[in-house]
Image (cartoon, rainbow, N blue to C red):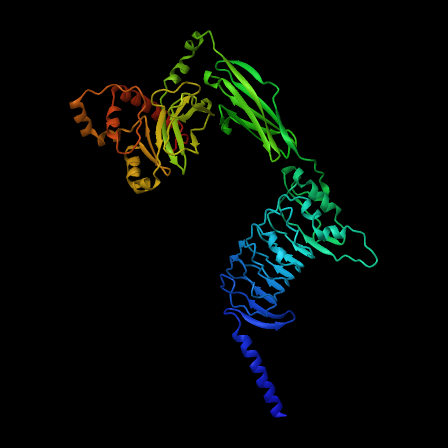
Length: 563
């Protein structure tokens, strides 16, 4: 009896040693109800092991650092039937990652970071019955997604980022089509379970077919949770699918009651446009081929399909004359309507000269303009003006390329003293002015700057540029390679170049400057311009403005804080 037992023990050792030796590091192999299994949980694996035993029928790799399923990741394990890769960091799945897995019946990818799935990959897995994709980041389910999942009995895409999917995703699914066929005596349909809950469904016209499909589901097709809810639009947030009735989609149409108007110089102009479409269209205005910034535009939702937009020109000037186009669009198309504005010049110019003394004083108010911040491809302007009624004073910002005769006009309401200009082009000269109300730009109210085109060079000189900003508050660098010079310079700047100024005066008499200061590079012209700015007229105007500024700042301490 002992001899038999010893022989059995030796046989057992001989059979188990190779199995243990052929298993993967950080993992272990075992035989269970699934057959031979490879278990790696948790582990520090960053890629699929290459030496997986050929006879493994189940692989379970969880709580690891896997980030990708490469091509042919399991092609050597052709007996594989169960693949569990839950709670990893998988973000990419190759279209041939499941190659040669003809026996695979269960794939679980719960709790990963997949934003999309190569659905054609499942044509290599004709036996697949269970597909678990919950708690990922899927935001699209294409119409052909289920085409190759012909034997699927369980699909879970809950807790993803799905907002809109087509009814055709399921109506073209062979499993659904079989379930709609009449049952013969010898033909029975197996149940198929769908989990679609806890997605941010957008219940507009695009979801109409899908909502209808959900309402019509019946065995053998079963919903794990039939209480699907809407996350938008706002009017339907929190409602169940069975509570909403969705209309059909149609392309937008833009209309305007008045399409040609004439207004007097200085009048406030209101342009109205109505856009109708489903889903709700977006609206914007253009003038001269440029998009009008949102500051002058307001929107109001009349109903689910209609948006009313208003464009306001606070004070009509001759430069505002022209064609204004209201454009509306949704995913089905776009539409536009044109409104012509004609500015009538006033014959009684004397009325402007008979204005109140306070208005005359405001015409000569000095506006301190500077570049306060810099972004990757833009700047933030900041200005300060010593006005009598700051709470009622509005401004006009004139912005455009230096050589453009007609600048874009942006109206800034009372109480606002900053504005950001973005999307600047490299190697381009710009001019931006801030004026009081509807006045034309004057000396000292503009900034001219040039965007550079050598970012690496700018980064090498960044320290020098910032030092100049601190000392003179004159030159500013923008990450896109931008140099700027304001038209008003601090007194401390002139101390820096006093010697240079005296030398220049000996050589020639400085001519009176009548235009704004600018330069195209940091090296050229900076000192000379500093000297030329030191004129009697500038000193007089600067002193007068600083006296006003000091008086108003004591009353409005919070209104002039800079970034």
